[in-house]
Image (cartoon, rainbow, N blue to C red):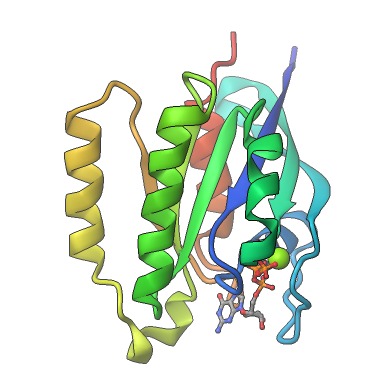
Length: 178
Ligand code: GTP
Ligand code: MG
């Protein structure tokens, strides 16, 4: 007997951090070196199986556009989301600051109980790393200490396909399946 649950997930983050690339890796297991910047938002779905929980989870994914001119659209997508991926690029400190801003905004405006994941992408570019993982862990620790909802943190490479599935698996396991 398999259980089935469906959740809305939104991706947020500065332009070019790799939100669409993460989604395409997860949904189609492909990567494009010349992906075009998203206009408005894109909608995709993908299901994952949690055999140990005898559960299938379907994600309805809103991949938002990171360019500044689309910023005002974001609340439409996170307003009824069950989970949010705040993505930064490990080679860009400004993108990490932007991801922190998204977390702040979600904590103020998003539905209570939303599952938040802070995701550092492009781990294949280690030689250009600007965001120190220990500092991110410290930030996550501080946040998790003074709130009841735990933020998930993970790094990945959409290009290599490393760590991507794990993020969605962690999120799926943090969602309320009864
Ligand atoms: P917007 O749609 O403008 O918000 O950008 P986005 O966050 O969706 O970024 P997108 O997925 O379009 O990726 C931007 C660029 O980064 C593309 O040229 C990708 O090929 C590249 N990229 C994405 N993920 C990775 C990665 O893991 N490693 C490397 N080296 N490049 C990546
Ligand atoms: Mg995009």
